[in-house]
Length: 195
Image 1 (cartoon, rainbow, N blue to C red):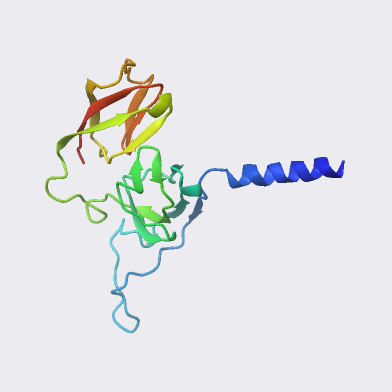
Image 2 (cartoon, helix red, strand yellow; image 1 turned 90 degrees about the horizontal axis):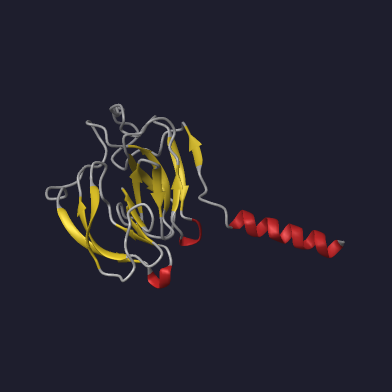
């Protein structure tokens, strides 16, 4: 009986450790920017700047891809503070899509709404462009190839390179964060990236 309880407790710990991303929500503003110095005139932050906006904390458990839902209707997200030792690079280890904030490869941080006209991250010139990437399912297993497609972008299968027929929605698909393949599908895809 004692051994059964021990096994049950151990199983509960394993399940808790393997759970999804650690997400916390708060209305407390993120830390002030480095150019704020006490004693000077207070800085007035524009609406949507992230100061006074709701924030979420999202982290990649065991260096795996995780998604964190955002409160309300955020038009985008921006990282206001990195909380992980692993490097966080927008579009590579974190991003924002219709499902909320996604993090991967150990990235973790505090996120606030972004994408407003008056603030938030905007891509530089030449970001909206078309390019091709190859993504294939190794040994008939699921694989996610990360590429920032953009909020208004899309992905088109350009040329199949596997023996297995690639059918969108069945063994390949995409979202703003990248392209997924499964069950032996491999192809060259055209990414039509649009902000």
